[in-house]
Image (cartoon, rainbow, N blue to C red):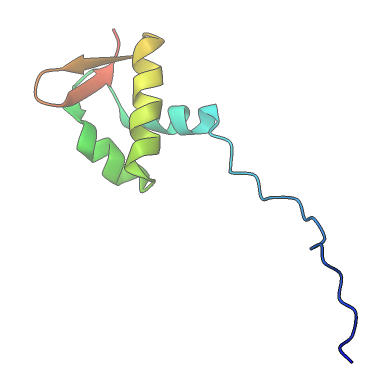
Length: 78
């Protein structure tokens, strides 16, 4: 006879993804100045997933904190 095993797996809290905080936006702004640099350079320097950086850059652009320039360049807004 086989031992009686519970049919339900005990529920465990699912891991919550790390919240994207303004720390990422602050990190991006610290890499920028008034001279435009390549967005790719910012992505490389942060060493974080590109989609996260691109989302933060977009948020900063919408907030008026950074400015886009032709050729994939970005800088702090004047």
